[in-house]
Image (cartoon, rainbow, N blue to C red; front, side, top):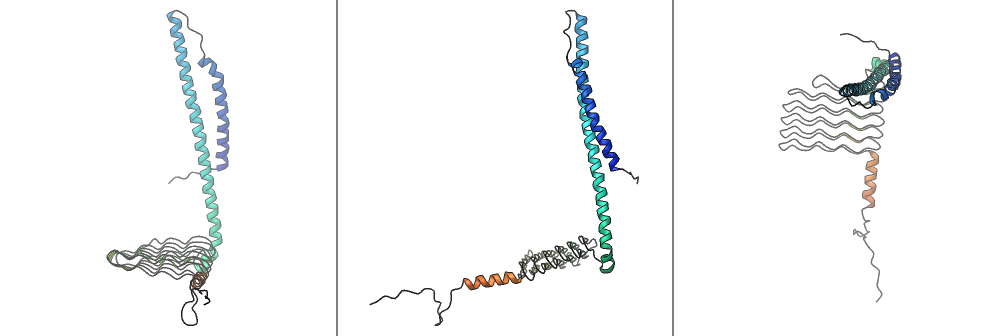
Length: 295
């Protein structure tokens, strides 16, 4: 493999010089415009007519070539400028990655997970997704299982982030992987993986964040009557529970939905209480008091 070293600053300066060259080309074309587009009328003899035709053809060819030259120059400058931008972006990404590696190095050494950044997606069959960063980062996705192997679980987030998606279960009735949990502060739980063909159960959805976050959707049951996965729980304060996974083709049962957060439960209880008519002392609901009529 051959390597190419490029200095974006030098390339940008070259692009600027080429752009200035365009004005020189334009000035040359303007100077030659009159002599290549205007000709004296040909004389009545045949020789003058042929000479006029020759110079006229030469002028047309010059105009065509000059137009092509201007277009080529413009395209070349644009290509060079785009290349400079690509190299500059690549250098910025490298610097950013080096900075992240420096920041994440202590926590990776002590805890095996980054401080900032998404967890890695699993690459081996049935492998679990990596955990997200302790401060910010989504969990990685679990990998699908092979024949008879359960899907990998999705990685959980740290303080803020969404849980990873569970991997699908392998054929032969393997269970789908569970979704990762959302961040401790906020984040949505990951969806559970689909159950494997042959009646595999769908993976459970991940739980939402501790303060805010909905639960993940349970994975669908596998073909052959697999049961859908249970939906993730909406966490402590605010968060709707995740929907249960649909049952697999062939008579599978859908999974149960996850419970909502405390605030959702209080709101539901209040609405239920305020919409129910009060019960009278005699055991009957006092729906309406009719006015008494005098005899």
